[in-house]
Image (tube, rainbow, N blue to C red):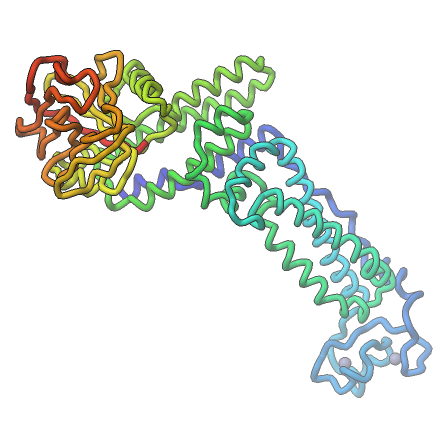
Length: 475
Ligand SMILES: [Zn+2]
Ligand SMILES: [Zn+2]
C-alpha cells in the first residue's frame, strides 16, 4: 500500500500547476543583467580614481592584502605591483578590480532578485486580489498576510535601491574596495530580509500554502467557488488538495483496502476536475455565461457527499434538498464512519463519531430502504436522551424531512450499546451489529412531527430491520 500512496504526493499538484503556468505564459521572465565588463575594462576605468601607493614608487594601488598572516596586512592594505615582493607581500594578490566587480555583482544580484520578487507579486495580485484579500481575512497573524508580504517586498526593494544609489554605486565605479567593504553588514541585512520573502518569487499554490495552510480548512469550498473568478478557484482547489494529500499521507497506515479504493476513486475524480480546469483555461474566449456554468458544475462536484448509499445524482440532490428544508444548506461533508469499512459494532461507531457535533446518519436496509437523521448533538453517553431543536430524520423516498417537535426534547438517544438512535420510543434505532441482528427498528413516536401515527418506513407500529450499510458524516 505504501507504494500506492506515492500518487498522493503534493508534488504532482505543483508540477501540474507549473506546467500549466508555462502554457499560459504567466511566468515573468527575470530581467537579464547587463553584460559584465571585462576585468581589463574595469581596471582601466578604475585606475584614474585610485590612490598612489604609499611606497613612493609613483604607481597606483591595484592589489588588496587579504592575508591575515602577512606582516603588512594592516599597515599596507592596498599596494602597487612593486610592493608585491617577498619582503612586503609574499602571497598571491587579490586584484582590486576583480573584488570590486564581485562586490558589485553581489549588489546587482540582490537588486535584481528584489525586483523580480515585487514584479511577480504585483502580477499575481492583479489576477487574484479579491481572492487573496479574502484568505488574508482568515489569518489571525497580520504579518503572515499576503498583502502584508507584498508591502514588505515593495518596501525592501525601495530600501535596497535607495541605499544602492546613495552608498554603493559611486564606490563601485571608483573601485573603492575598502569603502564597499564597510557596507557588508548592510548587504547581509538586506539579503536576510530578502531571503525571508524569497519563497514568494515563484508565486503559486506552493508558496501560498506556506501562508495559508493553517486556515485552509476553515475556508468553505462552496463559498470560494461561488464568489471568485475561476482562476482563483483553481488556486484554491490546489490548496485544498494539498490539505487532502497531507491528511491521506498521515492516515496511510490506518487505511483499509476499501478506503484506499475510495480515495483512488476520488483522486480520479479530482484528476478529471483538473483536466476540466485546463481545458477551461485554454478556451479563454468562452462566453462569461459558459464559464459560470462550468463553475456551477464544479461546485456540484465539490459539494457531493462521499456516500456509497447515495450512489446517484438523484439521491445526492434529494439529500441537499433535505438540508435546505431544514434551513441549513449543506456546504461540505466529511465521512466519519462507514459500517463496511470499519465494522457494524456499536463500539466502532462510537470510537469514530463520539464528540463530533453536526452529524448526518444514513442507513440502507436489506430491503433497500434509505433512512437516517441529522443531529447537532454528540453521540457519546452511557445512556441518555438529548435535547436538539435542530434534529430531523428522513426517508429518502419521502418528499420532506421529519423535524423534531419544537423544543427538541428526546431528539436522540445516545448509548454506548447501540448505533445512532433518534427519538423517544424510538423513531429510528440502529442496533449493535445491525447487519446481522434484527433488534434495530423504526417506530411511531411523538418526538418527531408527522411520525405519531406511522413510522419512518410509512408502516404501522414497529418495523424491525437489518442493514447493508450505515454511514455517518460530519456536516
Ligand atoms: Zn607600492
Ligand atoms: Zn600582504
